[in-house]
Each structure stands twice: as C-alpha cells, then as structure tokens.
Length: 75
Image (cartoon, rainbow, N blue to C red):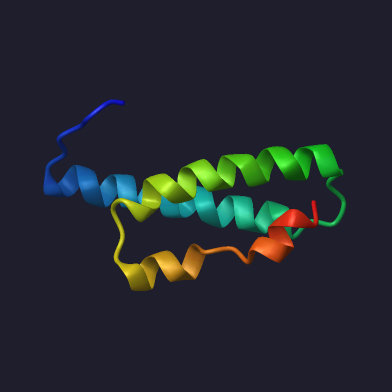
C-alpha cells in the first residue's frame, strides 16, 4: 500500500482525471460492437478507477458513477 499527500489543487486535478476516465469507460461499455473480452477488461479497470475515485469524492458524486452489478455481470 502506498500513501500520497496531495494539496487542494492536486486533489481537484486527480478528481477531474478520474471522472473523465470513468466517463470514457462508461461510454465504451455502452458500445455494443465491443466483444466480451474487451468489455470484461474495461469493467475490471472501471472497478479499480471507481475505488480510487470513491476515496476523493462525496457520496452524491460517487452515486453518479456507481454501476448496477447485474449490468456489470452481463459481460
């Protein structure tokens, strides 16, 4: 486990980067042309990025990116 100390500006930047990455992955997961292996890889990465984001964001912000487990298990 690693620990980091960020100042306020760095926290805002990390928040922005993580949100953009989550948005892109959600967009990609909606693409029906992707095969199941790619979807599984994106879903696994989404879970990691989401956990990182959950450490910084408020509960209301986190709920915007929470995925339905039944939708995630389809892939």
